[in-house]
Length: 543
Picture (cartoon, rainbow, N blue to C red):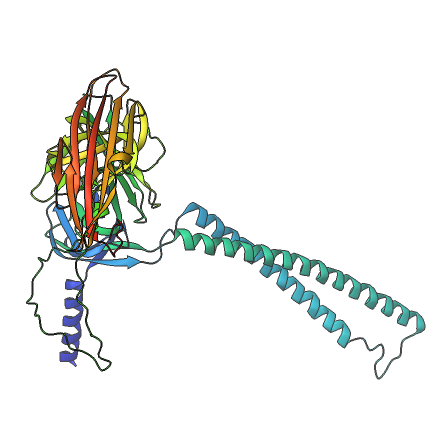
């Protein structure tokens, strides 16, 4: 018996010695680093009561989408961290004023309907009692006519009163029940949209004595990010291009970012950081299947000559699309940290970004890009001159792929795309058409002819392009044209005249670069011939 008592006492002492107090504390999101995909959030509580011994601290009000593997905990105070984990709280917003108002109304109406139901039950029981005792005589005594009349009147009047009361109570009960259903529906709808699960961080800590301290937890969430956007502004020829770098931030973490320290990072923690591994590839004979057709087809590489002729793409030009004009934003003051693999913009001004998934545009940086202006035209495709701003060594600005709004001399020109993946060191920005430069490409009929010699036929083509500068200043312009490329050894293409042009034989591209004084014109001539078997027909195309 004594041994059993000692064992129980030991177990009780052991349980008391290792029991833990659980302390729930609120946390505040005070800092966020948003990445291209995902964000690192920081939740803090600067005044946490830590009891002596081992205890559990539960930090509430953190996103449910927290990535537990990325959790980091920093402590300030005379206590140590034993372990940290994450969990989800599915019951939240219990003290919300709107939810409490609905809950209180439901409770009050439920009590009222219940009381009405009890009153109905009493009247209905009285009614049953009257029905069961409607016999007007007993075994010993009979009733006189007057007594019978009095009893009948009493029975009738009371039954009518009861039925009237039951009818009134039934109407009140029905009204209360309908109101109760509406309130319950409203409460359910509110909980569906507002009472979403939240996360909580469970910390096991230990302290030699009771103390106060601060706890900061940082972690990654997926449902946030930002998209780079740009404004490119030019005040005229010879002026630098002003580039305004903007971050289009969005988040739906379940918590509004109110008055937070925001950092924009070009990094992407969700990207695959494993280096690519190349495995051996083998080549063998192609095996024919049962119907004598090849089971595999070796495709011949095809070059898209139409695309290669687009000089702008070959040198990194941005394509124009229409878009509404935008006001020039002022970049926020920011501290820029150029790390080894990413860049971070720590904004000096605190930010507020709602958890609604909508975009929040922030200007984070600004550059003055030295630009060289030149006109560019491809008369064969479009007899218009386009003003280009050429920015050299643009890789130093660490730009990301994104859309850009183009403004020239205060007017909105269009929308383009910045693509840093281009290998060119020159960025071309198209500033739109200039109607003061007239271009005309005509076929010289007297020099274009066909002739036959033996088994071959030769077609000769001649074109003249006239460029007139209607501006009051001299311009530099480049003119792009082409001759076809042969895909058959029997078809011979020969360039006969292209004075002043740089010829790129691989693409059949010809480029003239010239200066034209104000109010003057210049002409260029292109002549080429195509020789092919007389019995065949030829045609130009992109394939």
